[in-house]
Image (tube, rainbow, N blue to C red; front, side, top):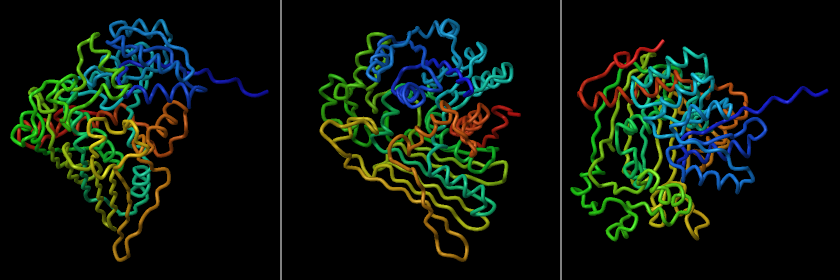
Length: 442
């Protein structure tokens, strides 16, 4: 007789914004044999209703919805095994800790949280309950990044001395952080936490090292009030129904995109949240140009730069070692086409079969005393974070073997967070910051 089927784990999701859709779709399609979606929680009923409507389009019945204030009630009533946290960053710890103490495991979007005190609450709850927190650092699952991990672990460049890491967000993707709640550092931790935690986690994982000291400089150079100095500012607060935004290439046109309209424009009456703020309007408290110098437990150093207003999108990683150098160069889009300027990165454009923008990726090993070698990488695609989203959900929902250790723990989430928090403190003080002075980890 065949072995009895393993019961599907019951998943509930809190925070039904745009990022939730990837997790929901994966649960109810590719991983329906191992996982079951049983409930939504959010502060906004209209957004939950939108996700339920999309569920029915996929042939899945609508699931019960709960106000976020009734999150604990939902966990008990729906007998939840795993909670997916895709809410506003500053609220992550509230849901993670409540879920852990209710006996659930947790999968949380990055960053795990936004400050050291909240991080300590999460780590203490993990130790107290013995439950598991997985941080959705999907960049670990990008085939390019997996290959970098293998090469470095195999000693392709010998002992690692330094890393140079430059990340460019173009004026479509980068601008989007300045339209929404991310523009408030208290909610997001700024781009050093919300965005760069991805990159800091990659370096920790690639080097198999922990950050020790961080020195950084950052400022708001392009967005916010600076837009007037550069000649880009328009006098409107939000784009929808604003004549001043009609020809602004920095304006998000939610009404032109059905899913954005349904998730945000149609949901404004519930909570007043506006998704399409003017990126040059007052009130921005995050930086858009940031430089970091970090030292690691192995003695290696990293120089890192994040630019949120570039003409093209992509990144460069150079790893220098005792036996050579590894170079990764990725162009995700070589420019921002006018047709795409009022949309989000990756959003479908009406009437376009293919984007005008082009991209490419190269991974090159440059050993001493030998010609450079182009390293082939299978599985990389420009969609779904380089193909990472699909690969990540196969591990966290489908139980796929993970010999590379891609599934990030709460400890990993804390290490990535602490690099960003140390950078933020260094912005303020102008001094190097020891990571252990922010939070001591075992």
